Image (cartoon, rainbow, N blue to C red):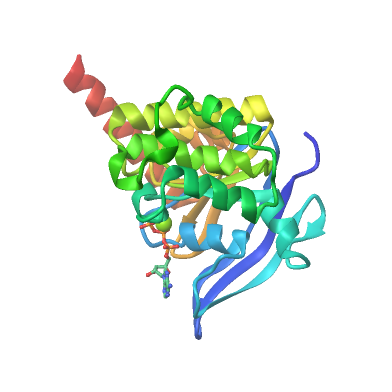
Amino acid sequence: MNSPYLTVRNLKVRYGSKELVKGISLDAYRGRILGILGESGCGKSLTCLGILGLLPPGLSSSGKITIEGKSTTESREYLDSSITSIMQNPVSCFDPVYTVGNHFAETLKAHDISDYSTVVKALEEVGLSRESRLLDLYPFQMSGGMLQRVMIALALVTEAPFIVADEPTTDLDAINQTRILTLLGKLVNRRNLGMIIVTHDLGVLAKMADDVVVMKDGVMVDSGTVENLFDHPGSDYTAELVEAHMKLSGETEEILS
Ligand SMILES: Nc1ncnc2c1ncn2[C@@H]1O[C@H](COP(=O)(O)OP(=O)(O)OP(=O)(O)O)[C@@H](O)[C@H]1O
Ligand SMILES: [Mg+2]
């Protein structure tokens, strides 16, 4: 394996004296998907926001984050051009008074990109190039699946080699979930992207991820390859998650058979 694209060492996120993320360390590579798994409230989103340098006001972080060996705290511009994000709830991530075209224009401007062909290419890659009048549509005029595709296209336009996807399919129906996850997998291969996918669904991880970090109450309780996670869980908590997942999928199969 090559050297990691992104390294995180001892990332902590605090709210006043309360530690919400308690020392996460991980390595992520281009061409591989790293899953962050854990139950609601364990600190997955704050870990992502800490990595992206986008923590909300009132929260602070410490630790060392590097991209290709360079510390991300040195330059906001470097961070923005190296890593981008797809967020959990597409509806709330779009400005309701801006059209899709406005959102692309904003992104191009923010990243100082003048070549509009990047938008055409990105829309093609997410399967939206045939949508007529797409650029004139407002967020409320689109389905959740379409919005998520637009959000992925916006991430691609930045040409950042690494994407953080925080629960990119939670608000979608099963068919759109599969479509979006398949699309993300293809993009990782086609563009040799690195990706973090946050999920609480072990089934999604098993299908998508190469590497995994498991979190509980802000603590990283396990990490390794997906195969290892299933075959040799590194913590009682992971073993419990795997067992619950196996039981549930076994029961589903039984019902369906
Ligand atoms: N802006 C904030 N100020 C104070 N506490 C916060 C803030 N945002 C999150 N928290 C707290 O930090 C903890 C971790 O939150 P986080 O959003 O990272 O969880 P999560 O693992 O992403 O959960 P979910 O799966 O529900 O999205 C939670 O206890 C949450 O209440
Ligand atoms: Mg979250």
